Image 1 (cartoon, protein in one colour):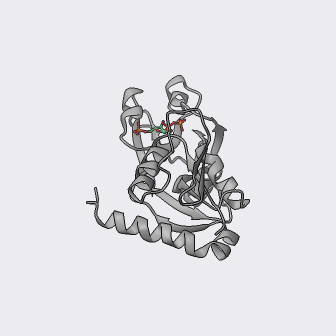
Image 2 (tube, helix red, strand yellow; image 1 turned 90 degrees about the vertical axis):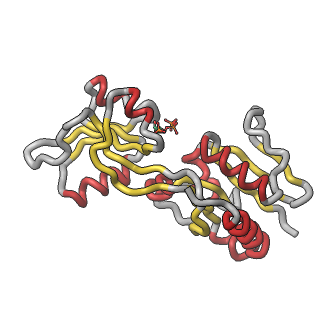
Image 3 (cartoon, helix red, strand yellow; image 1 turned 90 degrees about the horizontal axis):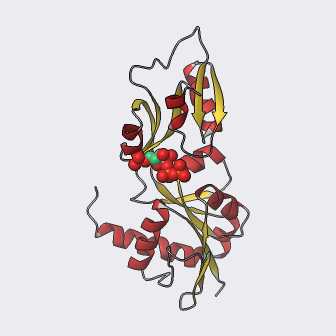
Length: 213
Ligand code: PRP
């Protein structure tokens, strides 16, 4: 049978993914603490590759990886052409507008300055709300922007809220909920259907044993 390549993001979602994979008895050799980026599961004929969150969809869309795990925030932002096969029960957070307490978001007389990593989805969101904005793209530590006066607000994911709190910011508006998703390359789904579906079936089975939080 053909080898399956699975893209896993580094970081929090990656750790939850590896934990889930170990429950369904795949990817036992994956060690997130090592510097290695490729891990082989010879028994199940699966190769795992560790990537940056935002690159998982690119590898899957191009068919270099057959399936991948990624946050919905990235799917919405990238608009890439992949199948969203299964909603995973982790990576829960909210895409939010945040800023200093009482900062006004909507004002037809002024242009709101927004810092974010998620430029396309932010632009679309404010367009639908009829609020004019100017976007500053940042790659991390987005919370600093309103603190130092680079922008009025940020658009970013909020999980526990501790990063906002630690920097004196508040959620001003919740935009949409985010969780992790198992995505699949469209051609891989046709040609490796059985193997991919077996993985999803096994995931659903172990998810059934867990209590939802
Ligand atoms: C995300 C996000 C926030 C933080 C929110 O960053 O950009 O900074 O998590 O989480 P919290 O509400 O639990 O504090 P991440 O740690 O993924 O790092 P990144 O900035 O490199 O994307």
